[in-house]
Image 1 (cartoon, rainbow, N blue to C red):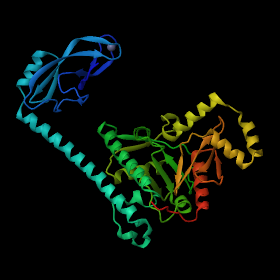
Image 2: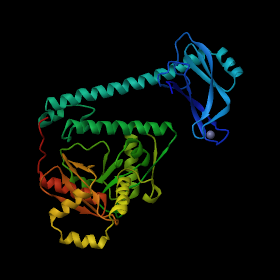
Image 3: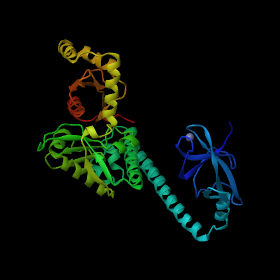
Image 4: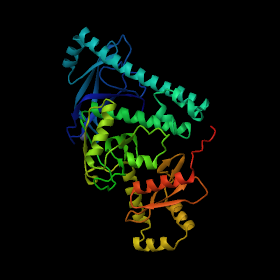
Length: 393
Ligand SMILES: [Zn+2]
């Protein structure tokens, strides 16, 4: 086993034996630096003009294929992957200036995108440094003079790390949306697990989009709340997170779709949005996490719901807290104003219990749904601290 490079094919080859798709081949013809190359890449030195024959091998059934592929390299650029030597030779001879110019334009666009991306990260780091070392968060009245594209990642964040997390989530979400669009997705399927009555005025929903959740490792994708809920639950001075959407309408599925659509349009995405029932989704993010924890519990220690309900009634707060500590995966589920909250399912029926983490006082919340628990968690945190306390960096 030595070093090699991988050549990714721009078309699929099917294995003659097991019909699996062969997507790449390995070669030792170049610098053997474990790099991955596609057509149009600079694979070799600028003086190299050659054709390299490589075997096709199926990783699945470990079968060498009767046909080979021919890598066509002209002036160090991987021009094409041909199926026969004759075809490879023709391609080598017909490299036109026109083709190279078009490729150069593609490459230049890629370069500009990457340059902008690098600038964005750099600007964010400078502003982050400015915001925290200059203690801009303390200068309440000067706040309005601080203009920044990134201010929504700073205001309301309790630590620089939280600002970084917000920025990375925001950036990942945007990149993923671009990716989905480029891959040909034109419609985003969304859902939310909360049961809310149509026409409800004070409401809050965690909206899930499976592709975004999976690719960005999110607990959920957007939070949509009515203005009424927002006014009574959120700090008016706090800048809402990029993925929080406030709407001034009573609950309906259409209102949520419209809100997400508007959010996308404001960021120049042209997706359609469609609401699906939870049962038709892949159940990603927090839902997946909770379901996994529930199934683990089922295997280990399954206690009938009624028994636990009775027990919980009798148990004192301290014992309940011990139960939470015993069951919980150390992942903190909720975050609000500098506090983390845990959440664990108690029994197979899905009853949820959590506590505010990181403080000595035992403050618990219980509920049937994630959002019910989150609301209670937020209320508890609000009661705990009337004003946010910012620790010195
Ligand atoms: Zn095969």
